[in-house]
Image (cartoon, rainbow, N blue to C red; front, side, top):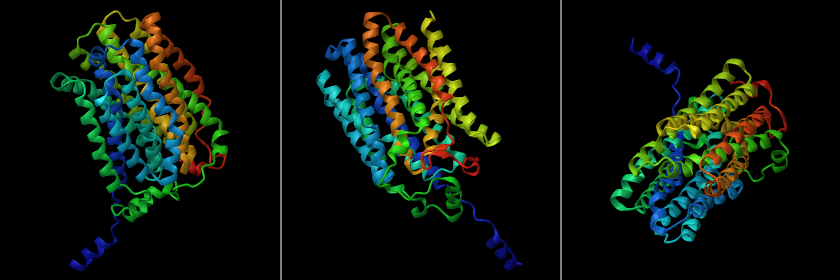
Length: 440
């Protein structure tokens, strides 16, 4: 009888391990850190601006300095991850930007802050493309949209937690302390990542044969680090360009909320520091829901219908449509609470597009997903780099309403780009994928 039980146990299927979900959890954590580090300055800016005597145009250029470093080094950052592998590359760039996050606390002028923020942006530039590359080796096709949406949702939760946290730290220790503490957090994450992650799932001690079979069923084959990136195929792929232009519109629009929303509430809506910290966090909570739902709905739609093209296009277009109406409603609302609620809906709509946008480089890029994502994110952050500097001038010359109206127009333009994207056209082979390759 005992022998029969043992034989039964030996023939029972082995349950797959969950190492890929731990990898995803680490990516979630680093996305939180990226947004805590990049929005802490927007929450600190009302006090920082007063202490250093900065004009609103100067503040705009300080915000923009991070974005220019971030935008200009997207492609080098993606190439860096493709070249040496995400384990070493991601650990390095997180250490880099964490150092300059902390060094920002030592700044004494607009120039020194701008210089630190530019170098901080250089480091963060590689984060999302390299993280995308790391997931391309670990995530099967049916989990890609969710695996991209969840980290971006977490990043918005990080952005939501940051304003009240920064306000509390400033009230007790001054505006410099948050930069020191947030930088330290990134250094700790780098050590954990390097210890746990492996570029090839087969080399990870925590992955059993059952999980490896799930991963290898449709995740791209990790033959990399890649020595040659097919730039000609990438740069002549129509979807890469349509996706990048769509993300430019997204980048311009979301940056208003990331960099300027606390300042807008403080100046234009007359909130005090405590209420500003609370209200500034709310749109990012709504945005987190959009990140998760966008990728999840897109995956489920594709799984049920087999129509990956429609699943990616329609969800992204719907997000921009929601954002267009909500941005205009928030801008012209007379009551502050009503404006904030519409702003929550606006950010929800914008973030509904993100999981889809970051899933498409995985759909079409394979081992070159990092390079494709870096191009897309370059365009997104060119929009984000133009947005804060331009907003300072628009507010000084006109009013706070004008930048938001311009953002709503760009959201309409983005809808047109959405319907030109084809996630079934692989860059590697430059022709539509076979049905079995895109079946979810």
